[in-house]
Length: 149
Figure 1 (cartoon, rainbow, N blue to C red):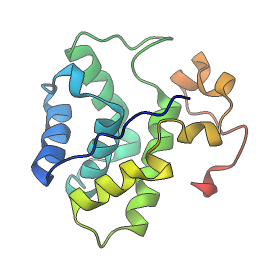
Figure 2: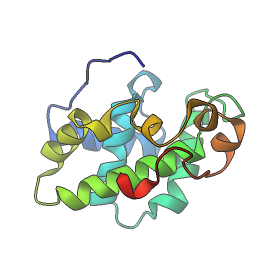
Figure 3: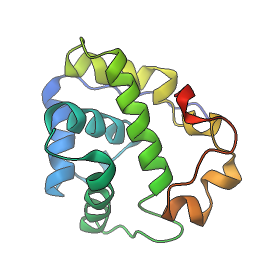
């Protein structure tokens, strides 16, 4: 996978704006980047403890996608396995970095191996991860078990 320049956040307000924009379905579509996904997840985990991520984030993302003209189908939009995988990843990161403030933790995550776009491919083959089944339901990793997250 090609290397991408990591886009970090400048302040807590920028992280919160992404998370709040996701919830309100008013974040501009162009700003819903890989980094935004991870930042929003970490913000939700830390500051919106009323939201049960594993259960509620799927519908939050689906609603957001549709609100910006996206489609959730077998080839685009919401991806169950990736969402649940990254929730686990963000939770593992947060458990290790709970002493950091929000901004420092988000930016550390984004610069870490866990924040890389190809991180899930350490656990899943491309065929498995990009299958319709993995998009629609949580599938177990076929390369490396998730305790290694």
